[in-house]
Image: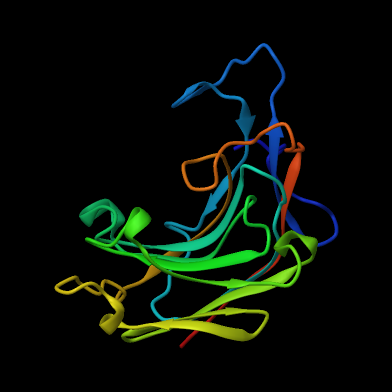
Length: 207
C-alpha cells in the first residue's frame, strides 16, 4: 500500500512502480526476505460488472522478470474459491517475450498453466509505447483485442470436455505488476530497476 509503488504522476497517469530494495532487507516474502516491492490494485467491493467491454491504455514495463497484467476475477471468489469463480486475463506480458501479448481464461479444471490462452505478437516490443488492451464479454463469448484489432474469441466450445463455463456473473478488475514467478522467470543481471507500468485509463462499457 506504499505510495512509492502506486501513485498518480501528475500527467493523468496511474503508475505502478517495481523497486529493487537495498540491504538490509526487512520485509518477508514467500521465498524469504523480499528483494522487490510493487503493487496490485483491486476493485473488489468497489466496482464489478457482468458483461460489456473492458479496456485499458497501458505502457508495460520491459526486461527479464517483469510480468504485468490487467485482469478480472469473479465476484464470488470468497464463496466458491479460485478458479471456480472464473478469471479473465485481458493483458499479460512477460519480459522475456517482449513482443507478445496474452489473453487467457481460467476456470475449474482449466486453470494455471492449463488456462485457455491465445496471444498476438507485435512487430516491436510491447513496452515501447502505450497500447489499448480490451475484452468484449457477453453471454457465452469472450473476445480479446489489442489497439482495436480482434485476435481471439473464446466460447464454451473451446473448453475441455466436461468443463464448466463460469463467466455468467459480475467480475471485478485488477491491475498489477509482478516480479519473477515460474512463467516469466526471475530478474537477472540484464534487468533494470525501478520499472514502471503506466496506465493512462481504464474504461468499462455496458454490454
